[in-house]
Image 1 (spheres, rainbow over the protein chains, first blue to last red):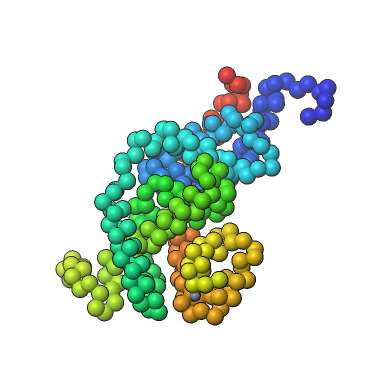
Image 2 (cartoon, rainbow over the protein chains, first blue to last red):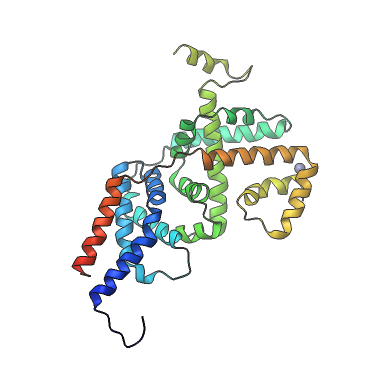
Length: 211
Length: 80
Ligand SMILES: [Zn+2]
């Protein structure tokens, strides 16, 4: 605003509101999707996004022009999530996690033993959309968050580090681990669905056909 | 670059986070090593599934509405 021109405070706030709205509303789907995947509950996700918008509006003056606005919104949402929701979350299904991890370790050693053949690739081609969702939902929250930010929202490692307040190295290791766990879970589900190659675990095939 | 280094930097490559000077050695190795070429191919598919086949929920209309109404309220009520 030019110097010497005094605008009534109300109109300034009014303008600020419109600016904020124009800048922030395009991210409502992205924020909601992440909120839903982290809270796993539509009602909590809506409250989380609403609260994120209210806080972002309140602190809009603190946003540094020229930095990533989307990342700024996600950071506010992450903080809100940790403060309000995470404590309420049921603990990650540790047994599932251990199971996945174990099967991942097995798979790695199998891979090392026969590096030329890749049955996983074939399995992966048969994975169902619902398997992808289930695998993602099953990830421990810290890993899930990094995968969502990197693979669904396309944030860079550096942006994710800023959103989560962790070093870039932590982002990389969580992303590595998260994707590997995701892969192992998807392969598990694909196997359970009976996309089996000859000689693979006939017991599961029988239980499938008995259904 | 050797097979081990390719394995370790696979995700960096697909995340566009690989250092510029590593790109050529990475591509050179993958171009001449069958195992690594398969790994690259597999990782590409894996990431494609995660990125493109994960269902994205849109914000419900009532949420947009709630948010917009809260702005309106603030604009007319002014800061507290
Ligand atoms: Zn190699």
